[in-house]
Image (cartoon, rainbow, N blue to C red; front, side, top):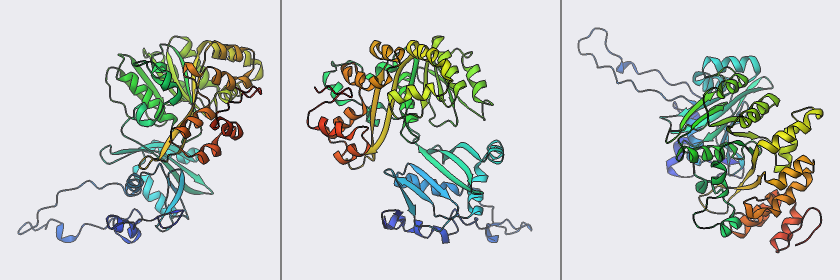
Length: 434
């Protein structure tokens, strides 16, 4: 890299061609040249050159997507007036290419968009869709949107292979030490539930969708069940193993979320992925599906187990909060919160730090009594069941040489408590020291 915020495309001889992409006829910014006249069949017939075999031309935007793939970036960022950018190891870096124009953005994306998504972009100012590079070499979740009247894009790279829990690094080291040989991990136990709701919480880019994909594929490999997913857009493509998996994309396979959720419960599902709990209707549909005997997976934007409860309650008026708490007590089985942090291991860019809240009798009692502030302490007290609180998982990652102490303290919900935990002193929020 040329500097702290620039991705150099001339780091080695193999990438020299990338550096002059803006001047090359194969650049995503330059229209492809016409076929040379010498390759066109002579209309007179005699002595004519046979027409060349037609080779399917790859979309121009794929050249940028392939650069993200090459450098193992997580996201592609494009904005008119700036050169293309990608996120590497959590940091946005600019490529050594010329700034994009509005014409560039239209030429890059309009040819690869279905008319349906173009209409959504024109009507609403933004459109989400999935884009596949090559012969399913890699998938990108694309959000194309207008800002200040110009097009911008953020595209998230999605692996075409669904990773395992081990590959993702989803483990709780302290719990692994007390787990009996052959006993399932806490993540595996959650996948064995017959009914209820499991929520994945975190900010955008925290790996929620990947964790859910790993959980569904774990079930897929072991249980002859019917799984229905409702996604916007579809990210991971599942291959039917023991399970039958129906993946429905909102806007492409079904008109909207309410219709998809209404249909889902009529499709004899055992497991339903309802995607993001983005509003009251979505959550109500998900909780109703859990109440009727289905295992429901969903995502929500929240930073911890306790804040997830608050986020759900915020979807409803105050006079409904008691009823919603009752519904959570009977149907919510677990909340998994996660963040992605820089790894200290070469070849491994990021490692997840997690908080796992299992809704056991103690958590249920706190929910009913509206004592959400005590949930973090309850998670720590119940660690032998497989629960873990963010601060404690950060401590375990530091002690297992997965992340640096500085990284842990930077993201810790309670840095002072983490400092003491790293010294072997555990502090409860209520002030008790053990």
